[in-house]
View 1 (cartoon, one colour):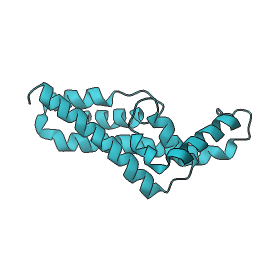
View 2 (cartoon, rainbow, N blue to C red):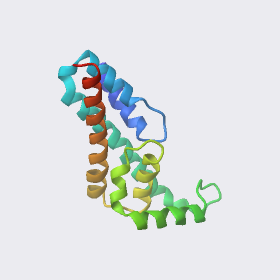
View 3 (tube, rainbow, N blue to C red):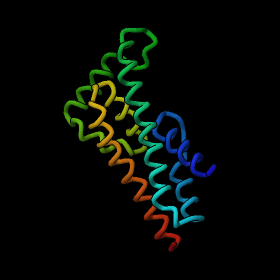
Length: 144
């Protein structure tokens, strides 16, 4: 049971600006228990999706402080990000699983007030697909 919480917490933090190693943990757990494929993917996927929801909430909430000196993004950077988002649209959230750019994309989803059902659907597709891919690679590599 502890291993499930470890995977969930790692997947959750991996989706935020905090570091995580959910892919390694998922692979290690699958090597030890390949019969737990579905629960492990579900735990990792939901943990990662919840972390992305935190990003959405931060984006939706912190945009109210954009006129403050301490705000971490300049007006021009924010305008550029919003312009980029308007250009590529809501479908860019399918890339929320990517390292480095995925977290800012989900944060931008909050800034742009993407409706939560659409956000959850698009980000969730990408997150779960990534864990399915990693699980498939792990099982194939170790011939489990």
